[in-house]
Image (cartoon, rainbow, N blue to C red; front, top):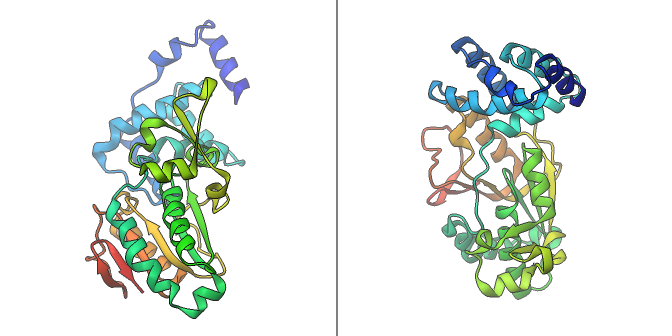
Length: 295
């Protein structure tokens, strides 16, 4: 793709900045084409009011690829056999806002109710607890899960746990795997946990912390699209899928909830975001607490 960019810049007189001003505005028909592509590939439903946002974000990819036409870019994305540019496109439209201990009540419920109940099950005691952070973004959620679980395991010797963390965005997954965060990002972590599970940076890394290996080893990061078939093999005991379904239409939400239900073991738990609801969706879950459900 670097070669494509160089050729285009030469055509425009060698001044890359001119590309910014020559990119056309996204038309209604082009918005429809891209929104259908994004929906079919990711399940993300873009309403018409997102047109200007999509225009701005796709414009970044046009400039990166040395293109000035949305039609040219659409053809490029859909004909790219490697799928590489589709990944870049998805990265542009994915929303990845997150924080450590975001929606604290969920982690209190995990610590005080869910984990103790699971610990009483003979199957869990022999096989271990399996947790899935299904839209992990840059890692704050699964690392928070890891801290809560690690503290629980320390009080309950003999138990084991594994955490699968997945996301559709390769960009944020790379950030999550590195496990490096600025001090403002970890401000909500209780000081004892921050000291126990993070290492402070020195020298050029002052102002940053890095996840310690004991916590990092607890989480398995993988690239995954929730629109794919779920074929994880063993069932999960807990699934976190928070602040994701708000981007899906009801049909997609219905399919996703069914897949989550089938991916949970007996009496498994599903936790969704506080801004979300499955009350209008057919399901067999029993509500445990606000936005928390049990199979």
